[in-house]
Image 1 (spheres, rainbow, N blue to C red):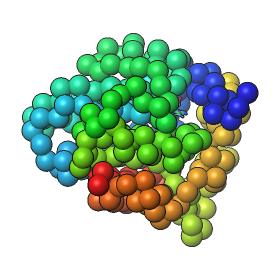
Image 2: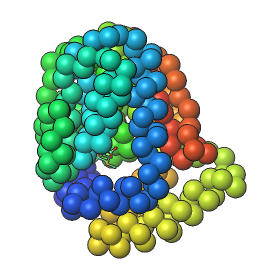
Image 3: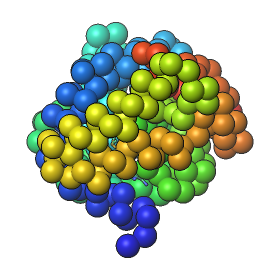
Image 4: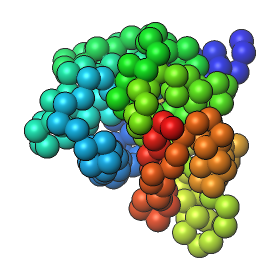
Length: 236
Ligand SMILES: C[S@@+](CC[C@H](N)C(=O)[O-])C[C@H]1O[C@@H](n2cnc3c(N)ncnc32)[C@H](O)[C@@H]1O
């Protein structure tokens, strides 16, 4: 099995327990990161009507739910939201939530969408799993309207190993795999998480890659002692 297929099948396996594990392991803090991402993006985009938001690597649909909630809170008319993910089992859970979004199977590097259709593309805690990342970023650029926004929430690799980052590493490498493994009975999947962060880019390197793929960085900042980083970039 190739690397990308292996990653997707791992998500298929943990899909039934993914939401519970996520809430416990993030102590619910991920909710505030998602809310902030949506609110800031709506502020940068500054439009009352949005035709299409595509949430790539949508998993069980959390981010789609936040886009809907926050557009409602801000009186923004959101005409369509589409969640895309290659894991059928994650999509199955998303569909049980009965939110006003559609979900379809697909990979970051080959989205089932015509050129320049999306106002906003988001990918939350998904980019690390995209093996052909540059192809994915170029695909996002193709699908976005001119001046459309790309929103990335991700655990980036920390460059300076200060005290806080050592605590994060300890949590990610020791505590998270144990609890996640216990909940999902899949220790391999939860060991993959810290390794995938270690093999991922730093905030600065991802900014550079985004620029090389045709984006202008509008915002990039770490939250909660740099545990999670938010990038908002505009298609040039
Ligand atoms: C950690 S989950 C994040 C799910 C969701 N976005 C969230 O915030 O909870 C990562 C997701 O990335 C998906 N994924 C893996 N490889 C992918 C790819 N090449 N393209 C798109 N999504 C991918 C997985 O199936 C999984 O649902």
